[in-house]
Length: 495
View 1 (cartoon, one colour):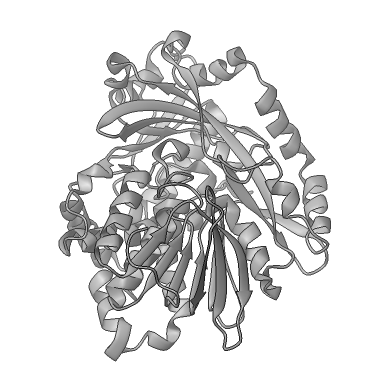
View 2 (cartoon, rainbow, N blue to C red; view 1 turned 90 degrees about the vertical axis):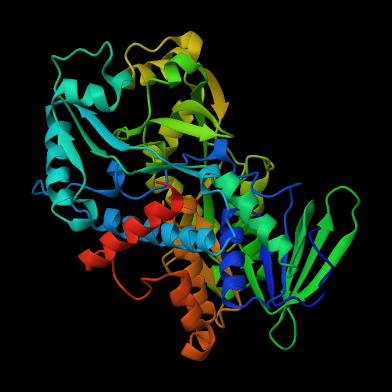
C-alpha cells in the first residue's frame, strides 16, 4: 500500500498498468487535491500487458504498421487510421514532455529512446502497395519524413539483417521513419506509480482482487477487493471508477452490471516471440521492421523484427506468433473466457465464431506449428538467422472486443473502446492495439467525457492547456503546430 487508507476516495482505478498510471497522473495534474485508490491483483504495477516483454514497445505512431493503411479497390491507400494513431501518439509525447518539464519524470531515457520504424515487403504486388502507401503518406505533413527505397543496398544500410543472405531476384521495398521510438511501458508505469505514491494522494493496494462493484444510493460506487493471500477484504466508496485491467476489464465491467455493457464479450488471442540476446547479432540491427500479416491472421500478428531495450540491455524480438487461449490475462485462469459468457453475449459470441472460422483455424494452426515452421517465418525476415541464437518467449495476452450490434449479433473489433455508464461515473477500457502507445490520448478522452462539468477555464481547462500545449489543435491539419510539437517533445524526451 502506497499511503494512508482512504475509505471514500474521489477516484478508484482498477488495474495498475500503464493506462491507470496515465489517467491517475493526468487527474492529479489537473487537481492535486483528488484522492485516488488503486487495486491491483498482482504484487506490483505493470506486470501484465504493460510489462516490457508482453508488448511490442513500438510506440505505435502509424509509421510502419501496414494494417493501419488498407488498400482500396482502385489501388489507392487509405491513411485515415494511420493519421489518427499518429496524432494520438503525438498527444502521448506531449504528456510525457509535460511530466519531464514538471519534474515528475527525471530520466526519460529509462523508458523511451529513438529507434527507426521500417516497413518491409517483397514481391511485385506488395512492392506496388508499399509504393502507393508511401506516395499517400509522404504527401501529408505528418509523414513528410518517410523515406522510400527499392534499392537493396539502401535497405541494407537501414536494416542489415533483413537483407543478409536474401535472394535479390525477388523485388524488395522498404519505407523508413528515422525518428520512431522504442518504449519500455513497464518502466514508464513504475515511474508514474512511484510519483503518484509520493504525492500522498494515492493509495495502491497490490495483491488485491476486486470481487464486487455495485452502485450505491447517491450515485457512488461500492468496491470490494480481497487480498489474494490473506483473504482479508477492503471496501471503499468511490465517486468515479476506471476499469483498466487489460483482459480482466470485461469481467469487472460485467460485475458493475451497467446496461451499456451487457452484450459485450471478449475474444482472447495469445502470442509468442522468438528472442535473441546475442550481443554480436543484436548490435547489427537498430530498428523496428514491420511486414504484412498473413491472409486471415489478426492484426496483432503482423510480423516484425524489433530492437528492444529493456533495463539498459538490447535484445531482438521476432513475431508475434498468434494463438488461442481461454485465458484473458497471461497470469489468468483457463476459465476466464467461460466466466464472461452469459445470456446476453453468448449469441453474439457464437455468431463471431461462425463468421470468423478462418481466423479460428489460423489461431489453432499457430498454436500447433512446429519449431521448424515457426523459425521459417523468421527466415523470411532474416534469411541468415541461426536457430541456435533464438529462443521462444511468451508474449502478453490480448482480448479483442466482441461488440453487440443490437440484433443478437456481434462484430469482432481489433482496436480499443471505452464503455461507460449513463452518467459517466464508471468507464472501462476494452480491447488491445494500439493500447499503451495512445494511453495519454485515451486518458484525455476520459477526462473530457467523464469530467465535462470541470472543463471550464476557472477549473481544469487552463491546466489542461499546460499539460497539452496544443490541446484543441488538430495536428493532422495544422502543419506548423505539428512541427513545433514534435521539435519540442523530441528535445525534452532526448529523441
